[in-house]
Image (cartoon, rainbow, N blue to C red; front, side):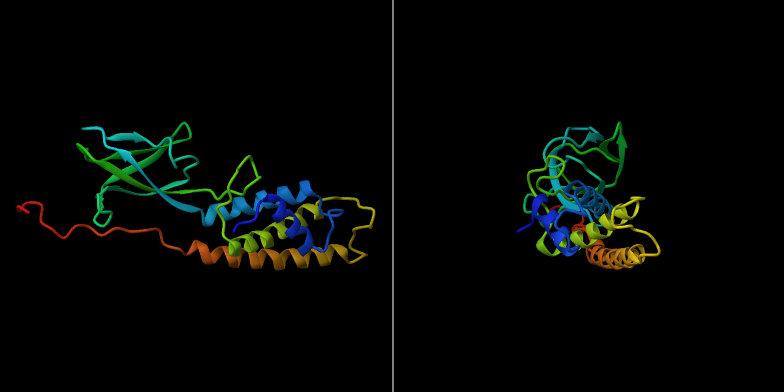
Amino acid sequence: MSDNLTALISRVQIQLLDDGTLFSTATVTAAIRSALGEWNAVAPVILADLIAVVDTQLTYELTGGDFTNVLDILDVLKNDDDGELDIPLDYDDFFEDNRPWIRLRQSESSGDLLIRFTQPHAINGLDAKVESTMTADQDQVLVDGACAHAIEIRLMKPIESINLNQASGITTAYERASVRYFAVFHAGMGRYASRKPPVSEKRATNWTLDA
């Protein structure tokens, strides 16, 4: 089960050996948001949803259902009722007024279009989201990335009561830790970035012959 924002904040603070004094809830929340943004840039959620065909219509705006926060369109297919022989269609996808659209190169007369697309991951409690989409393994990768970002944020603070300067050696230690966390974070994301989106096979039947 995926962790919510509160649990992730706690995990980041524990991993940084902090009780919230050095890495506050606000700082860690900002770090988690930054790490999640990087994650979504390389390994977002892959989803699919149906829209009804409108006879002779070429252009469709993707709204409602699961089409909230679409990042990229992966594929458009003529939906097969059995779900085994969806027909890939020629199309162009684009955004207008920050809204996703598709335009078929040849109109359809009936049935449904199956749209495959990507969407950002969500964390329960972050930016008003009520559900987390990441797995437990992905949560740990995100925590590593958030640790790196939290350290980076803290390094930008010019003056601290613990005299964070070159002479103390603390800055160097933080920088080394940040490099390590970024390396782990990026390696972890790479595992998911390499995932291939679903594909469909074209029908082998000849449409010029009777069934």
